[in-house]
Length: 524
Image 1 (cartoon, rainbow, N blue to C red):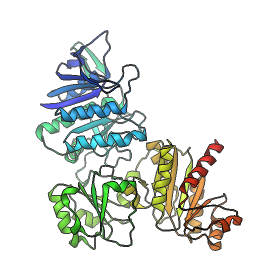
Image 2: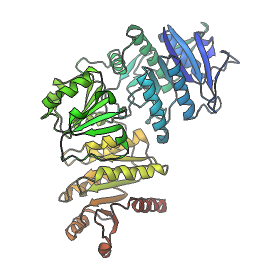
Image 3: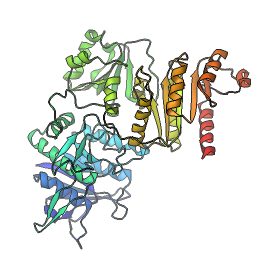
Image 4: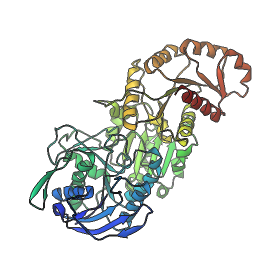
């Protein structure tokens, strides 16, 4: 039998057949873990957790239930620390599957929750989690090491059916029916509501069915089997575990054989160690191998290290710059080899995307330095986030994903409306407070920048420039009708003040941030 924990507001004993509760635990707001008496129904007040447990048992009754109460009955909320404590309890009590109707949309909670989710994942726990009912980015449901679920808002799915989302821009792989007929003590029937938290338990039951046949199956294979049992299954799909970020990496070795490619020493790299030679890598110290650039030309040299990571069933991420080497991907297709390039990420933005018109500040950062964009974008985004603003750092450079920036592929075509579509898609998913888009561009592309500005209507434009010369000044005057900020690597900038531009030194990030923040506050 599969041990399943329902982390919710508790389970009423005996209702809808929920009489198989092995353990009933409550985690209080001050993080005290206490065992509670199995609760019988009182005055018809059926808890949310009871309904979730009943849905699981409807589709797979052979389970051992653990009830973990963390939600307050009045607010139906809990602190993130209670959720973390609940997952810790599951780790230490041999729970195999966790059903979560709980999640957070507060970006400040993502880091602590990610740590406990990774710990559970490494112990072999499978977590099935509901997306927030606003259908925006939710932790842990949207996280790669979790099976995320949302309900079907239209009546296209029948009871027990689900769809597998192969390229989920919100990280939610499963769309499932949430309307289930439950028998109340074999007398009355109840149809559950249309909401994400009632779609999730059905998928939890499907996971239990898979685990009953394949007890040691890894998460990626469970997702594969969920796809095969979905109503949109197609045999010609090669790869299911697609991703547009590397949120799941715990400790990676990065091989960069291109000496021209600068790898920045930013905050995210504390989990990524860079190597110029693969012979220096101790396999046992890393869970992921990241291969950068020149991978096609150097593949024969890298075969030994790739083989070792495959043999130990560790992930390999191939970041192939802006190109799509389809034949290479097909030839080396493997459960542990994942490809990240422009064409893969574009799949997440294709199809019928739900968008939201931008009604928050948009800052465009044009980089003329060729190597300062990622670092500046990351640091400016972090400044806003440290002050409590949910800022989006979005980059047109693929390497931005190494520093937790969103990546938007930009083709050479002049259809800049597609950039706007992608921004609006991300805004719909994440509900940002401010968006900062960084574009690496040549100063000669004056007309292209004009078209981008006309399409996106930025609230503020920033130029990163090595040397602010008179020639550069004339280019910018042709491009912008507003007053852009100039960020230069030059030390002496006072001599340019008479040109009428607001100029900052590259090292004066704090001053730039304060200037922008004051500008937006005054406009409000």
